[in-house]
Length: 304
Image (cartoon, rainbow, N blue to C red; front, side, top):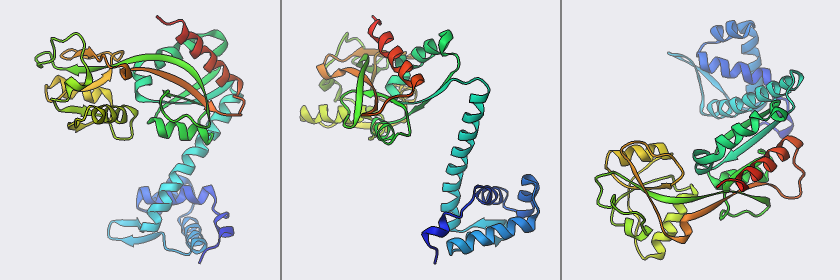
């Protein structure tokens, strides 16, 4: 049986070799790719199995296959190796002239609306050309969790999300609207109340998204049920379903709709949203991240 001290003996080289063997399903091919003798790989994996107290690989008709324990370890190993490769790349970039690195998480709405244009404008500033920005899409709750635990510098999401443990700075505003096919019965309307859309099936975003929860609350308050024809992962997919005249969908009005889709603003007060830039409470941002936050706040304040 393994102990916690033994777990500390895991090394990156062995994990990399284990992943290579599983991807190639053959020790000899993995050895050739990694420029090492097959016997050395076998020895390292045997030592790893002894350390963990479990079998990781078995020989099968289709070559070497991972056991359930092996599959679990390989999933973690890929994450660790990816992180280490990113660290190596980031540090090397600083020696090549990089002046800073900002990891930003943002909701689908923020990315689909103005954020990418704002970040591009920031990066075009001569003083910021040595700063690298990584942007990843996340649901609001996951985003805030990552900001709180320090795995991301900055998060941008709807400000009605639970913001405990983070500092908020005001960003942009938007307004939710209903996307419909031009031949839909509601297409002639200039504005709509959300309750008026509940007669028709909707295209929804995943339950973990802020928009999903907001619409469920609004439907419940009206004493109605929100029926979904399909759940999709992003606004582009929602527009495709609407363009096929299969359902309607609530989307940010600032997101550019494709041809074949009409967008009608919702008149409900809650449909007007404000986004916030957030970062960890009681923590000083690194200069590149602070510069990015200040720039976004100022640019949003000057927007029409």
